[in-house]
Amino acid sequence: MSVVETEVKIKLNSTILPTDGESEHYEMWLSGTFIKKSGKTYLRYVEELEEKKIRTTVKMDDKQALILRSGGVKMRLPFNANQDERGHYDTHFGTLPIITRTHRLVHDYHEESLISGTFNVQYDLIISGQSVGTYTLEIQYSEGQK
Image 1 (cartoon, rainbow, N blue to C red):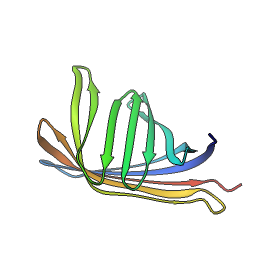
Image 2 (cartoon, rainbow, N blue to C red; image 1 turned 60 degrees about the horizontal axis):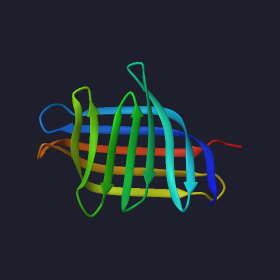
Image 3 (tube, rainbow, N blue to C red; image 1 turned 60 degrees about the vertical axis):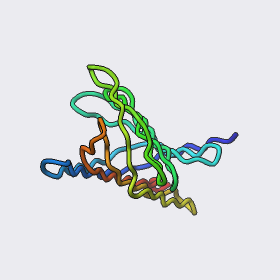
Image 4 (cartoon, helix red, strand yellow; image 1 turned 30 degrees about the horizontal axis):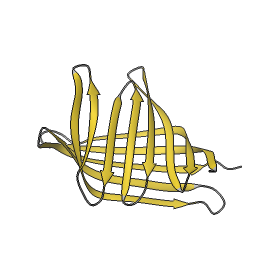
């Protein structure tokens, strides 16, 4: 099994449209690693949020995807274009079961000379049977010039 790891620059755009409240938008520029293993593609990066390090792995595909976060935030966020998926978010009070209802899931990827791509997912986050909002995440990544 061959594993290819490449350093990439990542631009992360996140928009949250809560069921009640104002829309929020975040943009981050990060350094990370693009990984290709057994025909699957992954991005790995570390975010710093309120002095906590959050290690994130994104498994990308057009039909199914998965975001795993550990460290300052522990979360399993699965996406499936065809059905609701169960995940979880760990809080100080215990593990909170969550459901994702995916509206759009696209992974556009190129590796002609330099690796680049865009991962885009839009989903409803459902907690205790109620949607708490619609989330849109777009991750653009590209290999630096050699």
